[in-house]
Structures are given as structure tokens and as C-alpha cells.
Image (tube, rainbow, N blue to C red; front, side):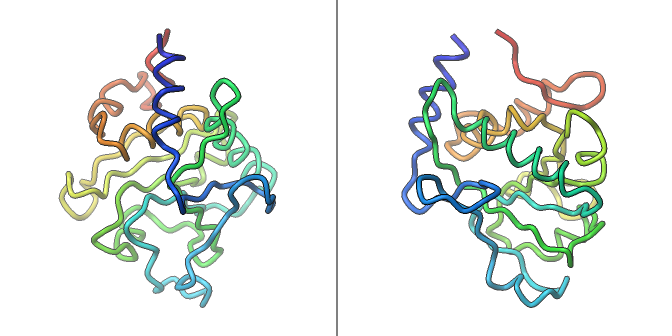
Length: 186
């Protein structure tokens, strides 16, 4: 049932103009794009708005970063479907060690969900990505709702949040004792 639900939601997620986060440009898949505003290498640049972001804030291990991106990409290929999605990858060294509060200052009011590949995501073998709700459901500052997610579950969460099929709290309330969402189980 879960597998069928994921496949159905994946089909709904095919949106013209959406981008993937493939590590290397490939004409058969969508490719990484970075915000033109971030190309100035200034941490004071504004992050792209009106979309969800996958933001790298730890630059200590390129192999772990690539492994995390590959796992996120695989999450968008349920049962052989190649689904495009609305995450914009921000791989910008000027954001090294930036906190949630620091990123919040760079976000436009129209930014939605932020998926942060931080030190824990890079160092932990499961690469649990920090998800931050900036959709207006939380108050500004350190109280923004967060939880961690395994890269293999990003498609399920991102599609459901984007399509408003489920709320942030549905996923945040289903985390394991260590605060990581590993799926709802079969």
C-alpha cells in the first residue's frame, strides 16, 4: 500500500520547470541549479524564494555530500519512475556552518521548506538531513519546527508537503526516538 501511495504521489509531483539535484549535469535528468543571487559568494545574499531548498552547510567531506545527493535522487525514482521535483540545491561555501537562524535571515518570505545537509548529516552514516518548516507554520527564530529525515524519504516528504497532502507535523510526529523520520513502515 505504501509503495503504491509513493508511486501515485510521485506521478503528481511532475511539475514543469522543477529541478532535481543530480550531482553531475545529465541531459536525461534535471540538473542542479543554484540561485544567481548566491553566485556573489556573499553570505548576505538572499536564497531563492518560492521553492523548497536543499542547502549544504558542511563542506568537510565531498564524498559524503555526493552520497547524500545520490540517496536523495534515488528517493525520487520509486518503482522505476523518474520523478522531477521542486528542490533547488544550494551548494555554496559561503554558507559553511550557517545555523537555522542564520539561514532564516537569508530566506525570502516565500521560501517553504529547507532541507539542510549540515555537520550531522555529513558525519552520520545515515546522513539524516535537517528539515525546517519555513512555510509560515512556525514563528521566526529558533522556534521554527524541525525534524531530521533519511535521504531515502525525501521524495515522500517533499511531495506530500508540496502537494499539501500532509502537514509538517504529520512527519515530525512520526520520528524515531533519535528525532529522525525513517518512514511510516509498510
